[in-house]
Image (cartoon, rainbow, N blue to C red; front, side, top):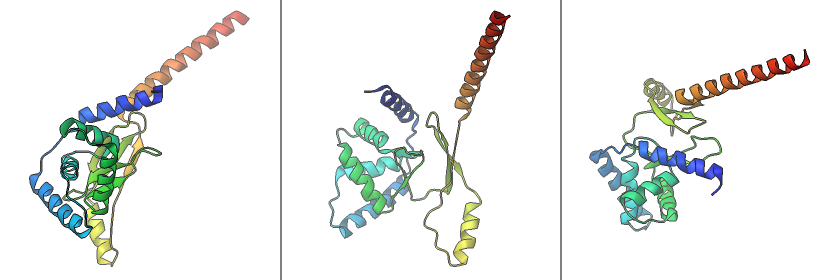
Length: 194
């Protein structure tokens, strides 16, 4: 495994450790009922793996990528192939129970629940990959105004990318250290030429 992939795996491990699982049995039951109807309509089987993956996503407090979801499934359910996780997420997206979002430019797709969620946006750190959600309080009022004019809203998304506080401090420290090093080198060169 190359160094870049090792860094990605370390970041993913940190993200998995930070994920908080939250129980909302009512929403989860509603999602399961919708999935059951959807599977019947599509002539597909209801499998324990599909049910578990849906349940897991509805317990997550942040969006997660396929590899993180796969790792959580493996830890809590047992062996499930990455392909099964991938196709289940596609199926859940088609059933409109899960939403696919591109949070990291040129990065993996993330997935989150769609039922009973409040409108929210995301802050994404470009350096460490930390994702935080924040509520969009006024969006309901704005959406209602557009709906009244006949506009049908399918999705609302706001992604703010930048540097989290920790990474910003780290970069400022590195920049300051680099500036001091360059100043010391310049002073040393000037001393030698004199």
